[in-house]
Image 1: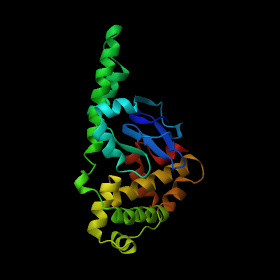
Image 2: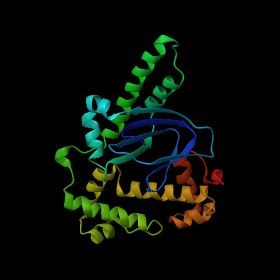
Image 3: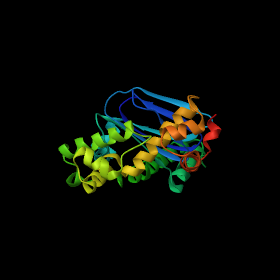
Image 4: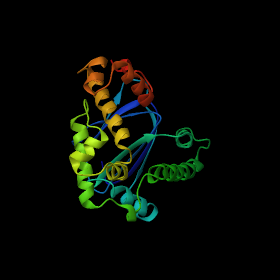
Length: 246
């Protein structure tokens, strides 16, 4: 994956994304995908069962970003460890409409390129605005000492998906108070502690079921849910029942 800014709107279908040696991320349409990196990285995309993949993908190089999206790129990269970040969010109606207009343009011939360029910039602006609403201002950045403890809290959650500590226990384990942990976690990871934990549990279960390593019930219990609750959350997150992966 070459350096730059990648923006994608997944309209239909599902795929697995891997960046270097990080855990795979499952993306199911309609979703917004943003990847920002200033160095070279290995990326692998794998289509998954659940319908044909239909999407609009944009790639902007570093020189263009510096002129058009420099402040936004800097803010995004300020949230990640290293020089690469990946964001997956639900795609709203506006993003889906813009992606469809790119995929099925109403003009052809010489005007098509002009139309596509304008729509690409419009989609990029809306996509970045979606994620930038989660980005803290520089004045609100988490102090390095606190950020280290919050990342420790994240690592604890990832290691204990089946039986995670409560918010109070997690704060105590990392030497933070619940308020600082909650606000700092959202600033660093763009989600609440509970929301992040739920997403990681569902992503892990998705991978276990899709690979055939576990049944739906086994995967549910493995990440700390009853099968019925898990199926409800899974359908809401990925748009299909977990049994469809088998």
